[in-house]
Length: 350
Ligand code: NAD
Ligand code: TDX
Image (cartoon, rainbow, N blue to C red; front, side, top):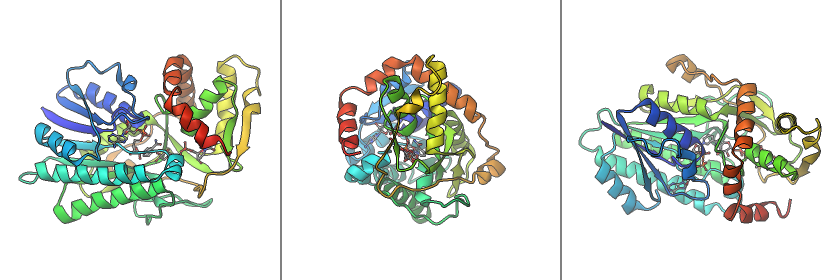
């Protein structure tokens, strides 16, 4: 029985990945290691938590002894590393946590994997999940390729770029079997409502302003989270060591257009008069160093491994809105307590 460690499995993307792996591979043992920060929520996994091939281990990847002891105890065959501080605005407010988890935490995992696989790394794999933001910011033309030079511009993307470099260095220097993928913006159920889409859904529910940074002209490429999870499964099993794969939705939106589309769907689904939610749109002070545009060329993944997104944006966006409307207790739960304090601090001066 293969033992696969997923770090950050209680977060947004991690929970979708854990669900996919646990259901698809009953002969694998999936171990979810998560610190349960504000973004980690075991309620994301209630439907699979009792399955016999799933296990949760609470712990901090920054804790070197804990990581080493856990690797020694389980002798994992594979690692899929998603645990991270993931919100750009938080990295601007407080970069240190990002350095600790995203860089030091990744090094701890790399060292532990190297340690348990030192005698035989045959069939083992360390898979590092990264982001398109490491490539920097685009103007109107062009897309990021796997060969685009790194140019991270926020503490978050700098910490992710650093961890990518370290994974490559461990592959090159120590022969650690490792792959990396860099994905564009994900959307879907279970995303913490600090990120644009769930934040706006939640605010529309409560008739609160929709804070659009700057003029709302910044562009992001959006991918349905289950398509990302499918790509991760494919790359984990069929990717080539030492390679990097870009993952994207080929689905670029200006923030203001995306928010307007969301308003239209929400009005329809909530039985509100068309145009009601759009009135909540409020242009606020821009994010410091706000990257203008991200766009991914995912043709390597498509050509080499045969992946392409299966969820069309219209369908995925409707499904996402429906999920949040049908699960108000999930939203209410995560928006209480700490999150409210964070929200007040973050938006006080905007
Ligand atoms: P998330 O913030 O929803 O979840 C992160 C998870 O990591 C949480 O469960 C949290 O508890 C856990 N975690 C944080 N610090 C930890 C620590 N020190 N030890 C153990 N666990 C810890 O993030 P997400 O959006 O699901 O992103 C997952 C990964 O995918 C990240 O590496 C992120 O950089 C990458 N990524 C995200 C996106 C996106 O659009 N969300 C796009 C591309 C890449
Ligand atoms: O309140 C907001 N208003 C607003 O205009 C928020 C939270 C965001 N925005 C803008 C900033 C971005 O241009 O919307 C866009 C999307 O913002 P986020 O949801 O914060 O995502 P982004 O900064 O693009 O980063 C995301 O994609 C890449 C994830 O958070 C990262 O983890 C991932 O690596």
